[in-house]
Image (cartoon, rainbow, N blue to C red; front, side, top):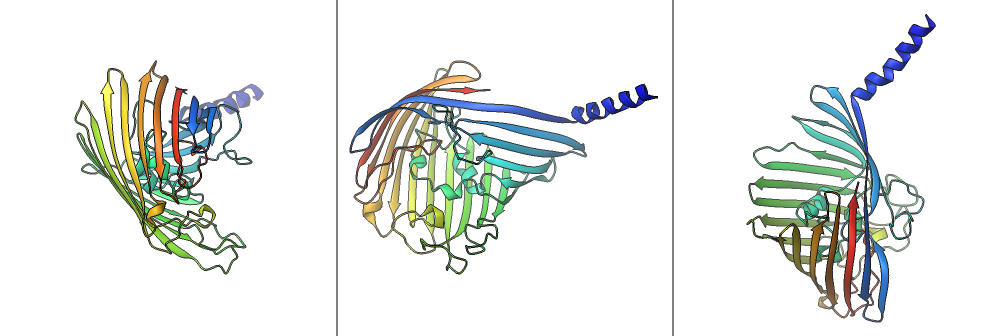
Length: 360
């Protein structure tokens, strides 16, 4: 009898495991960089230039009827030092659980990317990096609070006649005491249309913010909004893309204030071209940030990068970038980990780097 019970208990987890899977994965991106901030030159080892160094767990459980339970836990780290990207936060990149159905799409809850950011990165260097990385001009001008909000609910539809639709609502402060109840709240919507070589991405996002530097529960708030349109066409011998982003609504501040979720009203224009060369890929990118109302806050970025795969999981890259700032602008050459060196207003920033990416 005891033997029968023990065999039965051993069989239960075996059945559950057969219906589930958990994958451990990771990316390590380490580079050597020489950069000029306009005031001095810096030589350094850097992490996460073209793709943020990270490790994570991704799991699924098939519960039948075409429905699966999903989860993802992802931690970012600095591959040059071993430090976590966010002190005291283990899963600082993504942390969500949800469900997906073949007919109805997916719904996820937790820390995840906005549909607005998904539209930004959908088209990008496909050999080694992500769509927002060192070598892409838009990366120089990204406003961080629009990327991965906490306390979010996101829906992704299945593809229908080439269209995919996305929607999100996120609670920024999430009812925390000492700040307005809606501070940081996000509403975001997006769509993708894919038809052969043509790809069109569109997205909208609005966010509750404040210009107050001292925040209390009675601090007045405002709402700014972002819109984005990207068109890409694969010609085979090259992949051109045009992208336009604008921010409107709220007060026209002169500088971004991430803690208050506010940023200047602006337009961003970008032209990219991905050119296959043998197994490798050349990326050419130019972008212009136009600050509305304050022309001295505008900037232009120029980038070139070459990626070459050494194997299925490993590749190398090399390239250069430059950002020319207006007299009041202080943008730097950005990367996938948002780790660009600080630049004083009005200075020109440059970056030359060589690195390796390994995926496991």
